[in-house]
Figure 1: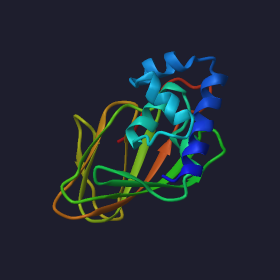
Figure 2 (figure 1 turned 45 degrees about the vertical axis):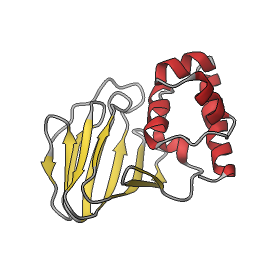
Figure 3 (figure 1 turned 180 degrees about the vertical axis):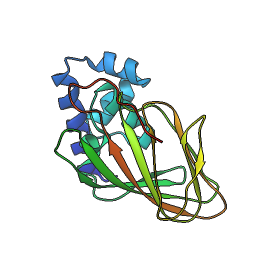
Figure 4 (figure 1 turned 90 degrees about the horizontal axis):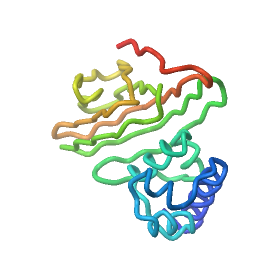
Length: 181
């Protein structure tokens, strides 16, 4: 990420942290980061991974898209590239991402905010995805929905996979939603 984008990301994280009344130390501890690393991120000096941004979003109880809305190019690491396409403003909140996974990628995702689901539509390639204990082979053009507030995974074979990911957060004021598979 370039310097202006890192600066915007850092300001967003700091603003959300302060709105939640969290100290730098507390958010760093909750997100499993060193306080110095979080400080550098907030100052626009760090280079956080996608997983780090997700952990911060979860601890701030904020959609991932809110943190990366200013990032215009795909975020990438360990064979996975993610780009925010659009953010909904309704209730429930819905964000849409384009995702590309390199061959032989296994991407373990930590739980997102309580009540979050992911709907994956495979565009090309081959992909297994879902909750860690219930991975499914996806078919091109078919959608699959699973709980994203539990550990989940994406696995490719020896080819690239491209997918659309729709993340739906729980309605504000609702308890965890049931997920139909």
